[in-house]
Amino acid sequence: MICKICQREFIPNKYHFNQQVCSQSACQRIRQIQNIREWRRKNPDYFKCLGQESVWQEKRRRYNRLWKSLNKKNLKEYEQLHQEQRREYMREYMKRYRQQASNVNRDKI
Ligand SMILES: [Zn+2]
View (cartoon, rainbow, N blue to C red):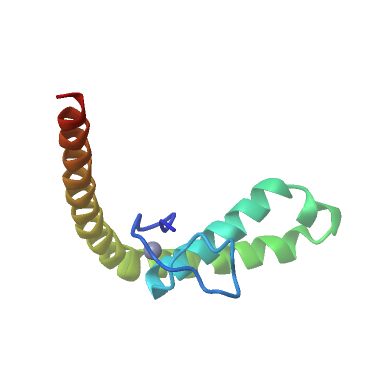
């Protein structure tokens, strides 16, 4: 399995066959945030239907603050980590790709 977030290969938990994100805490956190966003995107009217706009707005304000504080600290760290991991992954990928290409060429000859 390749993690959808850090693009690294990982072994899925045997209890979660369709796990798409590795168990690194950074990836798990991002996944959680993405899940919430995805859910909101699919259910844009959910909160409106409750007739509790102001409550919802207050919640959203709080959520945004939390998100921003997460952003500042962790996301920067994550970004750096992610870049390194991605570079490493691409290096591996290119190595494999080249090996494969040379194998194919050998077969032709
Ligand atoms: Zn990951």
